[in-house]
Image 1: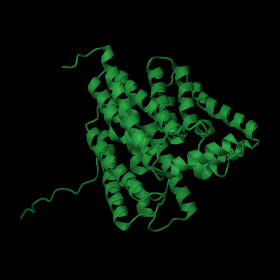
Image 2: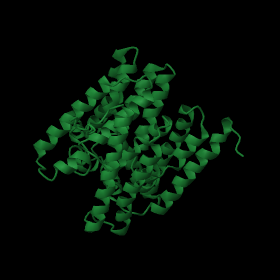
Image 3: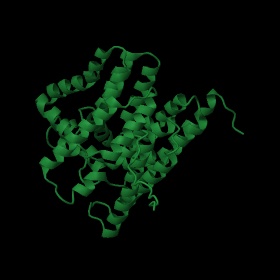
Image 4: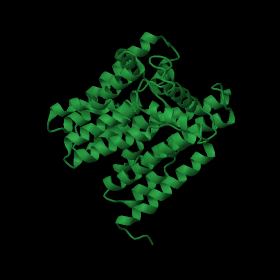
Length: 371
């Protein structure tokens, strides 16, 4: 029987790391578009070639930070250190570290920590796919920890760094704003992004505007998820996509500002559920964002969403393995992906309605006519 104590988290963290490391070893030579992009951007960066706006708009629509790790990976590959392994190892380091933060946020609950340690969603995204979303998630959670421990300014700087690693955490800036005692501190969220842009502009002799526009224009993939998957049957015009994206951002911001909850984790969870219910842009790695918040809040919907997300991810990753070096798959593969995707999307909508106490309109019960 496992004793509950401070040191018992260590075997859980070790287990989390080993499981992820095994997947990295198994999958380090499996090709995918993102791993190709890491190599391409790393090689250009190492040669001192500017990547903004192209090929960054396709291969690296982020702020200039991770590209330095990609350049280091390319450099180390000259010494027979596998590029994919090096970058995936970095990703799993942060994903494993999140296990400890889950432990802290759940009052040192080993069960919750173990669930995160073994959840297939973040394991697949970081260890198999090679996406680095574990990095911004880690720093986002760390900034929340600092906020809760009354280190407000330090929290904002860490939050700023999470935005630097990948831009999507900026979507939740108004959650931080609502919890700040000194509202003016919210301006510091731009500290690391601004510094990184200035440094890159100086080193690679490119304009600041090119970097900013490349990052701002990125919106994920349109027409592969949720409501935009239906709308894509009618139009794929660029202007329509931008209008829908703008409408989503406005709606998302208004919801965050209007929805009140003293529990910051519950606030994040509800916001993530809103995001997945109505987002106009989507990529499969986004599914890793919500996992720690589901577990920390001890949501009753955690198991269902994790299982469905895993099935949806596997419908893509198995296709990648079965049909490498192509994005054209047999019709039955697309049907499976669409069915699992729609089921997961409806689950997010249901979870959002339940968690936010939103009642869906239902038909009135029929009544007997009186004579």
